[in-house]
Image (cartoon, rainbow, N blue to C red; front, side, top):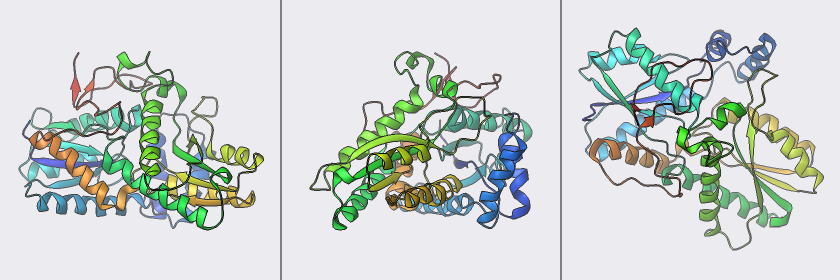
Length: 364
């Protein structure tokens, strides 16, 4: 398809204290989350002034993407739309259409396969076409998953190498340190059905976990080349659980993992939020506040590696991904799982409640 607009597609967040609870209610609608849990999470936002960092970061990213496209002489505008806060998808699609564009390429700020990280966005965009009265008038595609793209993983590797060098300069040995790769926990049932149906037997815990492990291995391999000592032990752990209490979610939680590390005389931890592209609330609150406080209480040195969202390498990598679809340039990936398919097959990452229409689906 000859696309004529890019939609930076994101989660959204509140930008004032009055928006916090309505935002959380939209995020959790129909999921049976207790009111007490919403009030607890609302205090995280309110402690930060009621403003999520994600919206400003996405506005900066939108401009950086536009600037990089212009530098490469690619004449296509970049718009920003959110699932859960203004600017909502339906209004942005109306704006895109009013500006004379009807073939939109969605770039989602989520690198992995899961219902909430991929299919739900495709459902949202399909519904937004209906709400904007653009069904049949506008087509929307989606950029592939980029969990193992150099622009996403290499900034993490650089950050890990710098963190490990800092610890050795402080006199800590690799045996004193543990590396924790963190990502957003999701229900185990959702993880097991993540990705194309034909891959479910191949990966017992699902494609979601497999993609994170693949990204982790790439990061570790590229870190090795930047240090002159052994890599410490590492683990993939989870954070930011938000579901109903009776439903099993992916574990171990980062807090529990830190406590277990302290019992083995670990003196330092490096935390790498590989599940996230930018420093939004789950990174700033759950890691920089809660996880850091646990580590300090246990007398462990704590270093959190930055997410790639502000790096030129990440921006350049996203534009490389756009060019793959806009002009058919070479598809790049650093793990055996990639490069991922451009289109999600029917049944991929199914809706756990009921099936809904989506955009950018391939029948097989």
